[in-house]
Image (cartoon, rainbow, N blue to C red; front, side, top):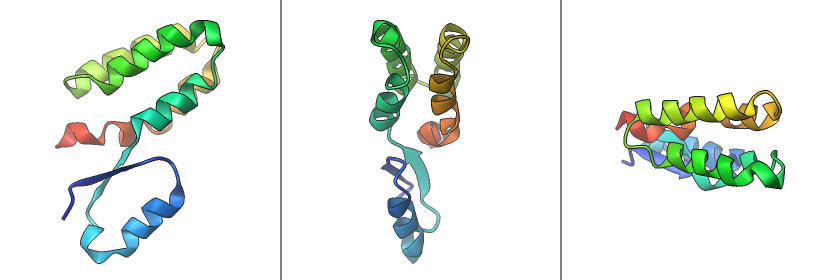
Length: 102
């Protein structure tokens, strides 16, 4: 039985996964590539390189504490002017960091 499955936010995938008895305990891991694209889409092009650097720092963090630190830096940098991008990242944070529980 798979420990976790990776997918974007498409509800059909997760629904189908839950319908298969052997996968009922499989944890959900959101796809970082899709999430990064969604977050960057909510930012002006001129700030996207810095945002992308911080997002990659989260995605490639060696542990959850490092990912949280990078998320805090992202939030402090962009929350005042670009609240929608911070919300886009934060709303799926637990499912973006599922792999750290393994």
